[in-house]
Image (cartoon, rainbow, N blue to C red; front, side, top):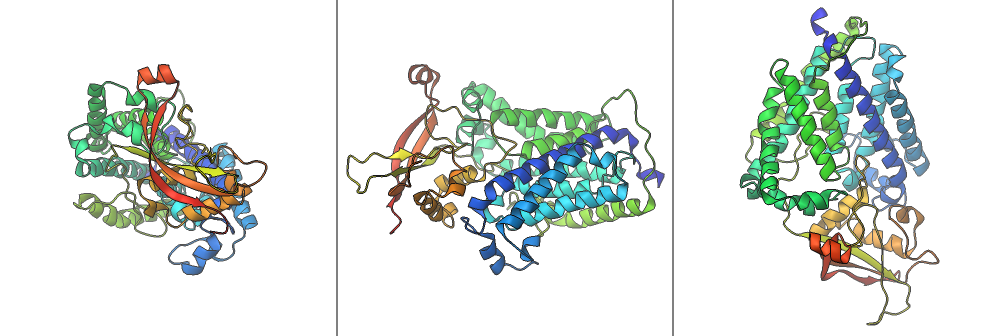
Length: 468
């Protein structure tokens, strides 16, 4: 089995494993801190109601066996603790068999959460974490030489991730083909970051270079991953650099960071001394080979999707989220709209009623507040509020229950927000208004000290009270 060993990738494997564990840690902590209001027993989309309608075969999850908020919290915090241990190097001090079991346990726990998470877990980076997390099972530990098949499957995953994202752009919005999408994207992306205003105001020729660079990085460079070294390493490095550019320009949860980790795994990093690594035992080699065969068989569906003229973004072809298809921003909005939620404690509504705004942690709200950097942490409610502003249909299942929670000053729901404008008692009425937002110009920023300018467009939801 000597052909299976690739000791030259020991550092790339180390970075990949530790990084996957760190992302798992963030994902489990985010789940633990946000689940009660979103999918808890009294949440906006309760897990018990969901599992009553779906079979285990449709959505494999340990929560089909039992669900309670206490049990979910135990699962999430246990996953966080194990992830932290793996990120700290636990796999380097335990036997290979136990390493395999620990990575498998992390994958089962997070799969169980994603498969009952409904709309809140419908993002491509959830499937990517599960796919990369499953790959981690077959990477070995610090004492065994990295299996060349597993390292190549990481490379193929990176190819599928980048090339699929490039194709969806090329086939989608015409602004990607005429290189003008970046005129709008930094302003209209789901959750801008602290540097997004500055990226938006780059000269238009630089925006066109950004778009062209994106096409190069996603449509040309991935083929370099399939070449021998050092070409593959250069391709991986280019992908890492472009992903860091995206990290600076917006908040995309852990999508960019997982891509960066995969890119690092391809690079043959120079090291002064390589540790002594033993050959993988036969049982582990057999597992890796079986995993490679399974991956190649499951690749039929994402490959067929990529070559199809009706390519779909961020889709899983099986309930285990293995070998998925990826892609983002096949269309780019030209106008940014935001749903602004307000409440009043006045007993009746008049023209003089004072409405107080609910601020969110991440999504744009008050015009003078600079957007914050949240990624790689994920604010699930804030992201879905972006979709709600595009169309009320995206929020049909959860928006009205959310408003009713505000009318009760529900503690779990209020913890998802930046603050509560009614700390002494719940409001009598809440409403939602639809605003058009745009970044201010440099002159407006100097004059008004505001990062955004907003204009009221319409009522999104009329004032409602608990009797409604």
